[in-house]
Amino acid sequence: ETLCFQCTLRPARTMQNPALSGRGQHPVPMNGELFILSRSGISFSAKCGRQTFEGSGDLYLSTLRLVFVNKGNGSLDGFDIPMATLLDESFNQPIFGANNLTGASPPLDGSGLTDTIKWKLAFNNGGVGTFLPLFFRLLNEMRQRMSQPQGVVANAPTHSDADVQQILQAAYVDPNDPSKLYVSQPMK
Image 1: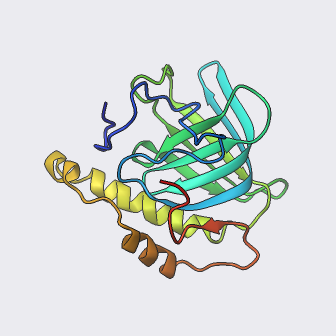
Image 2: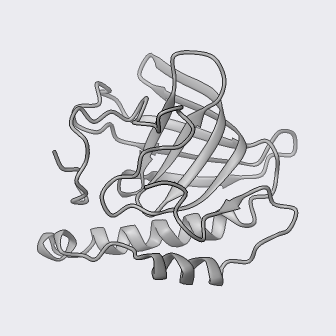
């Protein structure tokens, strides 16, 4: 099965409850995917029609997607938000409450979801100075790849470890920011 941006995926693709490592600690990487950073202290909520998804846990930013991994109770293990499908993303700094990133994503074929998904990621531990520049850079790169003719996108090179090193070297890292940057991949 392939997703619109030509990444080979596991069968029975779902946005909710993506494949996680044996103990549910980390998302399982897709072909060509590299993880850039992770953040703890994230509150996640999403609404798709009458369905709602909520949890608190960790957020992973990769070259292909945002992956929320729930560390709390409930039936939600995690949630995938592919970069190729992001719409209307907005960073919000409310007077009261945590800084948050909101947006929408259309459902993926085979996900069991039928309506546009409206999601929110709240950064409860503050410190988004490392996450935001990396997120917007990767999102911009994905959109540039998606705007290429289909044959070019299918043959587009994936990010290498050297690319990740270059991205991380260009990032300003706030020592008070709780993000974990992956200089090498956390799992393979």
